[in-house]
Image (cartoon, rainbow, N blue to C red; front, side, top):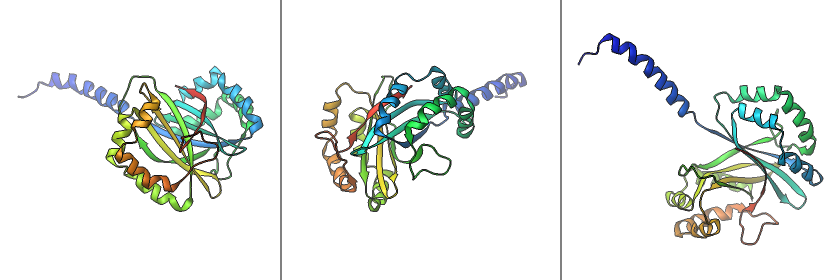
Length: 258
């Protein structure tokens, strides 16, 4: 069937709009994990500030396409405290948005309060304040409209075990991923970096959308997952001070912005 030119004139603009909408819908979320130190005496002031973050700062984060932003506080070894952040970037030009944030007067004033409380890592790259870490695993899981609970945890890893660990997590067994999803875990990322030169750490973030966390954490230990752990556990170094029954050490969330 031949199409009349008037139909073509009408359809082409619609198709352009559809492609634009589809392009926006398919814009991939970029995930970032970063770390910075904090002295023990500065923790109370840092928590106080972030329990009531300035509205202007939150507004600027939103304008710069930062979403689902959490900061966790963790003690890697006695007296050595660090802040671990996870956020998602939903824009199209990360560098441009970060440049806008740096120029924002309210954000600059906020940093005058927060920066003196933080201790940048010696292992960070040039130009970084927080050290960006490498994402070595991500599992999106099932989409959900339910408001999730968020969890952050840490564990050590020896330098000589990093290659084996990253190779395993580049192709996680399907049965393990199925158990993770079955037990209501989604948006699960693991980041790798150095706290100090030669001292490596894994930082995990995940969201839980179930109704009984303790039960689901027990149920995740099926035969396939337990077999998986026989490969991964020997590569990891559990940290001091973790709670009874924990392998990864849980952390306290001290800030969150949807």
